[in-house]
Length: 338
Image (cartoon, rainbow, N blue to C red; front, side):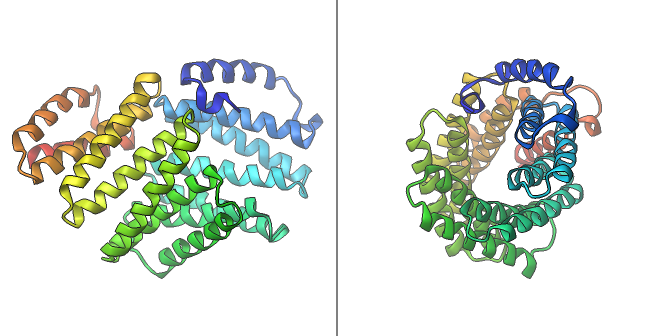
């Protein structure tokens, strides 16, 4: 558990690989629910490592193996809530990988399955705050795919957002000082803000993003060794900067983006095998250059983009690059052209 956040990806890859060599010799039919779940989680960890190292095909293979393992386990232990929980999460990781690559239709299918499993989980124990969280996540994910995938925002999107926030607030009321709960609440409010932006509710979006940033900061300071919470704080700063740019608060937006870039670059410097940190920092540097240009600092913006140009070199055909890189490159080229 400690290694999930404290170790670099190279170390995690070695551990996962060693675990895999032991696990592949096990007979699934002879495993208990608890041991079988650990096997599936080890496979999932391999997928996460591959995803953050920029190997989506390897990640999908590991995530799919984990999901299929859990599916067989659930047939064997249909009354085990922990197995049902992890089966739902397995669908999430597959959907999230497709989402990151811009394959939104495929991602939606996995997120819908996750939502059905999360609903079943809460039905089995309606007062369980952990299951409330799962259902909240599932509503949030469905809304996220609709918002990010270019689907037209509609009543269904807003309903998912409202239900995600409602469930999250119930859990927060039960655990107001829990930094982990605060972190996921921050993420839920971030998606609520995106929905508010798309419906032209700038005041509501600014309020949601400001609160999201405060919650992310609370979580990060409560657990300063947790890299995921540091990353989430950088994301919250980015979201707030985006809304501030729409409301004319450009100086504050620049400050928040500069801090977000700095935090992500520090994370990448501490673990250079984690290309996810590098890519996220680079994406925000493009956003920052665009903002600087809007404030009249054209030479500084152009200098930043010239420096970034070296980092966008790639070999082979454009279509062969992963979806995230293609989108990032297009954004860079548009910003440079402007």
